[in-house]
Image (cartoon, rainbow, N blue to C red; front, side, top):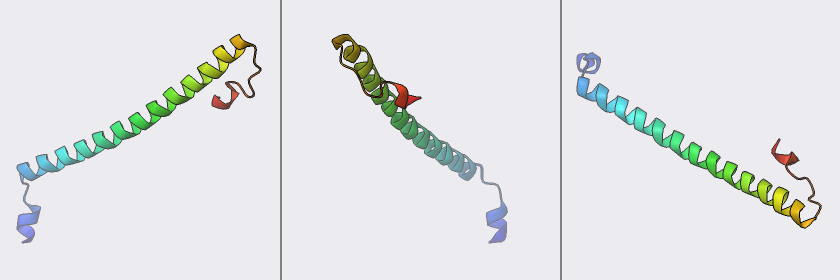
Length: 68
């Protein structure tokens, strides 16, 4: 029993590595998607409030200060 656990099985090692890498990639892609979505929303909101708000002559409370 112990000998079977200690023995190096290349197939199991490769499967474990692939599983770990795919899990890592999935987590990284999910977090990247969330972060990029938030950045897009923040950028769009700041651009709309900044440029179009100033163009209309409407004083914008806060402005882009909340992003910094």
